[in-house]
Amino acid sequence: MPELPEVETVCRGARPHLVGRRLRTVEFARQDLRWPIPVQAIQAMVGRTCTAISRRSKYLLLQFSGQPAPIAIVHLGMTGRFLVEPIGGRAARPDWRLHEHFRLDFGDRLVRFVDPRRFGMLDATDAAHVGEHKLLRGLGREPLEPGFDGEFLFAISRRKKANVKAMLMDGRLLVGVGNIYASEACWRARVRPRRAAGRLTRAECGELAAAVRAVLSAAIAAGGTSFRDYVGVDEDAGFFARELQVYERAGAKCRRCSGVIRQATDNGRSTYWCPGCQS
Image (cartoon, rainbow, N blue to C red; front, side, top):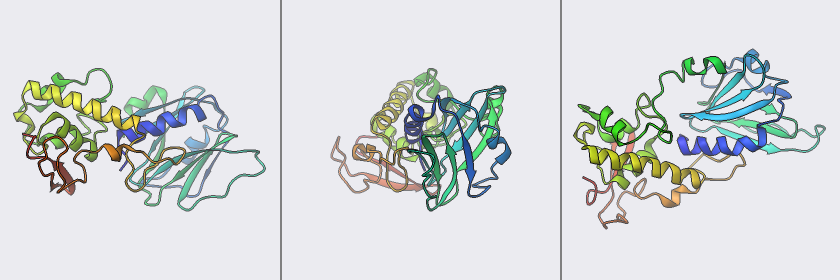
């Protein structure tokens, strides 16, 4: 599933194409994805100008002009692609792609949402109530914004029996740190991901917070991590897979201490670490 760096890459890639352009038409190949699509609310955005594109956790937020300022909420799910195509004259509109479920026509830019497994979603709200939306109101802290640091991790980890990786991936506490980046951040911080979070020291929490920020920032700079389905708005793959130190490297040598990378499965997800340099 696309994680914070992938969604942030899509967000940054879409801004120069869509912000300032007027939404001309919306078309739907179906009226539901993971959940029903509020077709009328999305259609009501036609004729308005896209004023901002932002991200909250793994959700894309497309804000439009007018009052109340409507917002389209997009989640990529497991296999969703939010593609932006520069196109020529309106007389030659491109054909629908396989597994393309909706499109947003901005005149000389066409947004296609392609999702083979249909775990993505499209919803609507407005700027005044976005924080109260059922999908957004319970979300935790953003790891790349002020307020996320070692003291925050130390505070939320006290008396926690859950392991460190599970804590990092708990979206009620911290958003966007999925399976890949949790394992990678723990490696950078020299913290074993399956260790009880409540046993972390204040110093270790400081190292771990810095590692989370560093690995997410590096992944964004590389355009995200592409293994199977993820691509950016222009269908370019992300190249952070080349920088992964432990994820999907079970049995390989650690590049820091030459130990052997191990793998375990927790709640259906693979965890990777080096027993030689992570304690």
